[in-house]
Length: 258
Image (cartoon, rainbow, N blue to C red):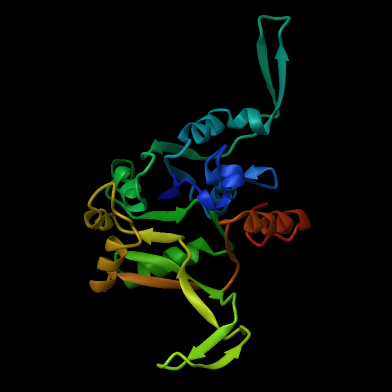
């Protein structure tokens, strides 16, 4: 089964680094967050990846083209015909297809553009900036059990700010600090989709989270897999630092591989 990763956006809210590289190539613990996501999936046996690239897509292609150089010891022997010697060649048992899905293409358009690479089969889809400790095998089992066209992972996100209760006239009736009871359920990515979802995508201007998912909801074809464990989106520099701190502490919840 193929895993599709959306990695083509501009990442404007973390522009301190994204002006140099695509957001999924920003590093946590010296490795791109994209690599961390792929390690998660491959831990569960899903090793065939399709990367929907766009903004600075050449950076992603060059990274995988030289992956073994990044991960291995290398001798450059200029005295002997510029020989290149790879020591302890470190590689992953991955198949990686990087597709240039356009600079300004919306999320749905990016998914539509990789249709031929997916083929007529069930596939995974997630975002290239979110880390999670989800059991992907259980996610897939849930998807197979209900027989619908789409499953998304539902994440509980705590309310960040104080809570106001306001009357119709505009009078503030109560104000209190946030509590554990104040939370929102959001789309955390880590989706499982049937090929029929391609039919709901018009073209490059389609936002996957709008018409396609809304149509699936209306048809009763979208199910939610609730995940109560760790989930974190790297949306800002602060988020990046939080993930970096977890990695450096040796307690990164998403590091489920050996």
